[in-house]
Image 1 (tube, rainbow, N blue to C red):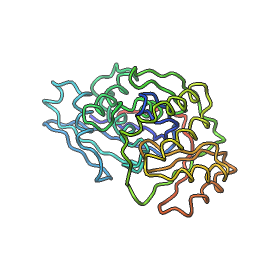
Image 2: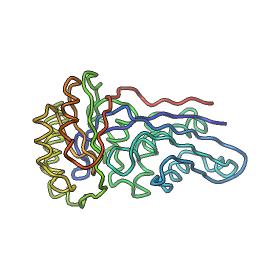
Image 3: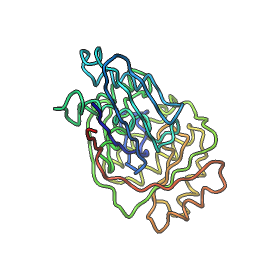
Length: 283
């Protein structure tokens, strides 16, 4: 028995750490999880990244698969990811949702989208991968589009398709160094205002405000935000808790925005926006 799930990545518009409310935008970098079940016991992971959290993977499986099925099945998971891990690009949310979706398809065929999502969210909290459960990240990865959420209430406040004339530049710095994310709460009022912008549909104002506030704490230079906006980006921000920086621009300006990162140490990627929902099928 096998199932293969595909879930996409996302970038931050508003970081949810400070207030429990966030906003995210789906991109086309993807994660594929192939889950197989054989006679036996145990959870076995094969991944193309050594930095994968096995605790998170195991917890997602334990929460997705009924206990009686776990006791008589050897669960093997093959993960293939285009998303760099540990940079704030929602790899944990995409991976946990993909595994949850494949497991639900196999063992709980009458599942709902909410059940799939909440399994990954609760597993993230239980394993301390996320402070809030990253419901905003999970929703953008799973549904695509642009999503505004209240993470503590597990509620989508606003969701819409992202215009396809936009693209995303992602700068992945050489250094993985981050600031103290707990200090983000000191600027809770600023992040609340950024979230209010997003709730009203003013996504780029939200992203820039989030970028300026977050960069002062998350080991990034606020002047980079101004530089990238000057190059033609609509919005730019540290993504998640960093250290990656994401910029959204119209496609005709995307190469100019990419060149604006040239003086920084790291690599620059171009991603398309994603409006596709996660998918799963049995093999």
